[in-house]
Image (cartoon, rainbow, N blue to C red; front, side):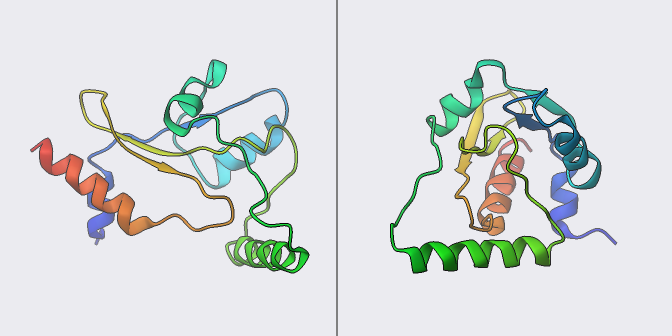
Length: 136
């Protein structure tokens, strides 16, 4: 039996937006085949990244080497726990996120990626429910 979240997701189309191709196509193929099997589109000119996420780039939030090391080890532990491997190929400094559109193509919600943090799934589900309820 499907969970409520799975039923909710069936009401939406999902696709990924990538910022570059031709740099690490093997890694992009692995991402698609192993983790995200929805259609992928290249954002020529980084229009979505810039419009929704304001050209945000990864920046240091501290110069304390102990905090940097702890943050790195926590993120590595979480990735390993999910059997995810990252790579350092390509433009990895630009941050993205999640944009939720209604059935008219209007952006209703945008969640900025915070490098090293888990997605707040409850917030994303609440946004999806709000959009789905408005469209019924």
